[in-house]
Length: 226
Length: 274
Image (cartoon, rainbow over the protein chains, first blue to last red):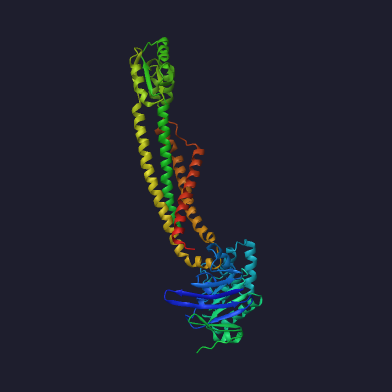
């Protein structure tokens, strides 16, 4: 489903990704781990075409996303949901409106939007918070809103960049369980994290990046911080 | 606040534009009125016979510069006099048809022909006096020209100014909403989905300003119509035809779309990188 072939990304004199090759199958849950500056975020940003690699091929489905035209980028992004550590919620919109934005972008009508947003907010258990603004939410509620926004459009892939970074352990586990459930529906999840406990408890595929290179890629991997 | 500022600038611009159009149309109509009106008036001496008058009319009908002649008898002159002074009975009391001269009103195609026609009439023994109001036409022509030049310059300047204000305000809004734009991009929004609200916003400011300006201009025109009618006298400019006002509104809205759309389009091209 996702294929990286000899992908490198250079920013001026810095090499963020160096000759990365990997394959991620449909429905996999993959942790991308590594120290700060290892290239985790760059790898995710390349997948959403926020940035283009300096060399190499990246295929999502059967399309090489390094070669797609600018007008096709929105179509790629509609297949990929993104969860950010800093939430990136719109402060002047309610929880409901933030989630509805994804469906507005997809061109859904008001009736469909109301129905699907209600379904997804109940699923992530924040339906009772639908009329609150982001500043009125706890960290866990805000992250659940972001997850709801990312999955309401039924993407094939969900990218999560440090989704538990700013959350307390209990709330973080709630978010991880939610991501696990989403993965069980068949959505591919790629999660960049520093959280050793979560990685080691879930026993999913772990790709360790160091200085832009893959230092380890194991199926039921572990992550040890030395 | 930005929305109010943008709409106010558009309002002032279109207030000037609509006022200019009205004044220009008014002066143009006045000019046409004076150009088409019997410009040369020849007054006949007391005792002039119908045969003398017919002879003069026949002579003028051979003159290619003359388009129309109209004879105004003493009785008709009295009728016109009474009509004009009906609000002042003191002026009506002593005047009878016998003291008013009969006259001949002569129209020409070109105001330049007025003077030669007047010279012909002055040679007629039956004619006591010839009035040539060509100075009015000359003055009105130059006034109309000045209105066109000055009005176009002012409106042109205001249009450019309004466009730049829209560019500035939409650009400011784009910068203010950059997080929202970034999120929409990541959610897969098409460029038009992100761009169109900004384009519509500029057009809305333009149309709101133009519509308000039209309402104000129409209201002022309606309020001052009785006063202006007295001032304009015989020139039938007022009340302005509602269809003309409706046409003005449509033209103003169209121009507002162009100005607002151009301003917001420039802002989007300059500040919105999708």
